[in-house]
Length: 453
Image (cartoon, rainbow, N blue to C red; front, side):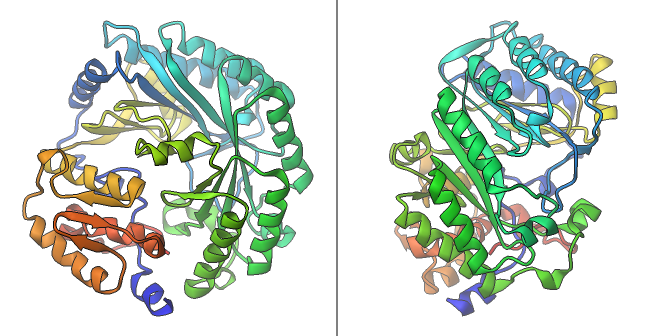
């Protein structure tokens, strides 16, 4: 196994989209053709499955050095009102494009730190969305909470407007690790907000943990998971730390490279975690995620309805996802579009009455086929060449790249069906890379992605 780690631990995408962002064709993209794909997808899906909305709330009071998100560091809470007003204006720009009332199936508040915002502003945001929309009968709303600043009043307010899922960023309970990543939060804070959510009535509480952090040891991981066991969250995300300082600048240079566990050492942290989660009754879902059998994510896996997009894994598939807020990414299935990356520019463009996208990609027929294969592998660990009777041009060339993986036991191919054995799930990103024709055609000459393992 160690030799496989050395062989396959290479830079690679996490495949929240295909094509991945560095391979978007921005030259042929335009705001006009993005709007056309939005309208097309809305007409096809709104009345049946509804739509999803991701809202990026970028403000944080302090910088966590492990974070690779687009954020804006400030302690000035007077920025809240203008930002919420702008998000609602952006939403209205989209609703003005369609004749039917949008039916919202899923809302996710991400960041940044959504709980930077007061309960009044959070309620104003959600109420404002539904001035021109209505809820799907099977809606599910979720948000990300910071254990240090989430209040019971915020939890109650969001619950009252329909939120039933919350995820808390825990990362690691070791003080040395917490100081290195500038995210010091005692177990008692996590325990408190988890208890509050359950008292209020949240159906699912998730904890986000990270392995591969600076100074992290297997003893740290065991300690963190044992503390997590005391709270028994419904879901656990166990992410591999993505060290990409060339993308995020000083935010990920708060420690030295030699302080990070690497290769076999890092992989051992994951294997320890996976074993402990299984003992605790959690089932591995897709990549990086674990859930109790009572959680909707597990049920979606059993029913083969698990979906993956820029929000990560979700039990609710919608063809159309609208991203609102600074840097948010939208997905119409036929196209992607990303908003501008600074709060100032975002507010300026929206207040001028324009949808604030600055780059994107319109998928070709071949992109759509490959996207389907990669989505199948990421969600179900299998795919077949006759999915929806579609075929990738020169599929044989892509399969050649899988032959070595088959010899290494990472995939099994029988006829036109590919399956990923359970032992090979840590290499799922590598397997998806074999299908990534844009990556093969234009191999990066500079660092673009984190390591796959």
